[in-house]
Image (cartoon, rainbow, N blue to C red):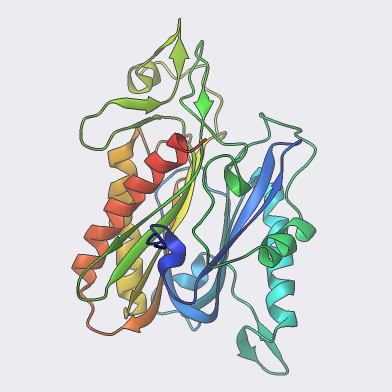
Length: 305
């Protein structure tokens, strides 16, 4: 019997594709929704690298996105969004604007330049390849796509652990589905959301260390080299204001699974997408479930190897 999809691609009409450079330890991951999904965003980290986030705010002209790109390469990796835009334009996907359609592709980056080859970053070609690789099969997790160069638990004198990309999903009897895909490249440790047990993070003398405690003396921490980014998606019908609220609520899941999170040295960014297939929707329920799947996806990112 076919197993139930427990990842973001459980939502009909959404595909996920990875492009990975294993040698350079960098890559990107695209979330495609070609028919458009009502989109929102919330940036809680103080060192973000993003593209097309302002267009997602309530009250803006454009309220739907056609893809979201999560990528390595720091600010350089934003170039990969051009490949996603090209892929969608070739398929006549986008916001109608005079003689053309303009694909809306919000993007966020992580800093992975210190792990592999700092001179190799996701580019337009890699973004296009991620689209070609996109599928509605369960999302591949761990050291793949935008997560291949991710690490967690960073402080002076400690060795970090591998991060990665993870996904998780919640089904409700009413037909509501809420899911997330997360790229985990945090300053903090990843912990079990209920017990607080450290699952991955900074190590010293063979054991995990409390990064929160080390942060009290942050004089030697390399700034701007961390960030956890992701997408929460649902089949709910939500307004622009509501989907932005879901993005805000989803950050609670990040705080449950990463300690500390949302620091001055992280660029934590969450996008939210609502496809509108499920009409009997409750924004509070979606937001609560969003936080749960974000936390679960973060755990899956470091547990999948």
